[in-house]
Amino acid sequence: HSVCLSCLLGVTSTTFVLFLAFQVCVIVYVYKRKKKEAVKRAERVRYPNPNGVVVCSVDEIKEMTNDFEDNIGPKMFKGVMSENELVLVKEIEGALTEERKFRSSAAKIGTMHHKNLAKLEGYCCERGKRFLVYEYANNGSLLDHHAKNLTWRRRNDVCLSVAPDLFYLHS
Image (cartoon, rainbow, N blue to C red; front, side, top):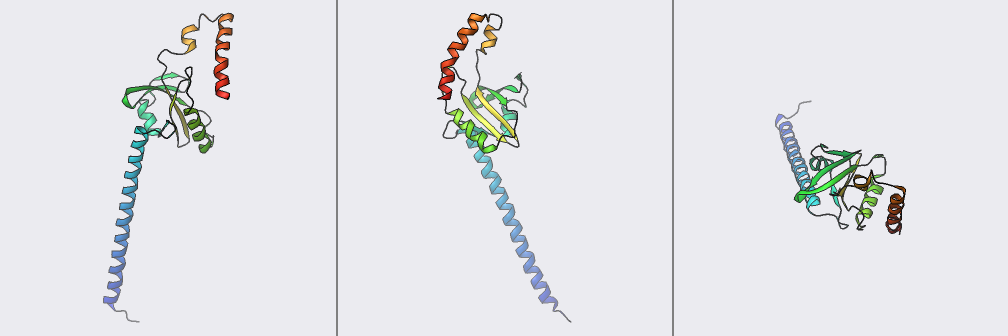
């Protein structure tokens, strides 16, 4: 059972070269894929999807809100989007919502435009987290202005003025 040493070395060196070439191909593939994903992420911020709603990553949401520093309500944070645009980031509870349904709903809400509704600027659906990014209402909410002055007559007026808006949303 003698084995030719040169034959053994020839097969081993060929195998080694093939193995090395395969490793280089894998490294190049992974590098190009990561670079392509980084470019796509950058384009998502610059170019919203066809509905006008920007798709964000969890890292982009953290950056936007300065790691959730400015808490302005329950699960709501003030943030800054590109071009220094102020936004409100709302974390959605119940992240068990199916990702496809959440994305579809967010895209649909993003198409709605009404003078009495805050515009949905973007959303995030990643790593089991769900966030909605709305334009920031500089004037605050109704409660900020009328919390102390909400008589029953005023409440009735608010309800009557909101009714057409609710009708708009449901139709």
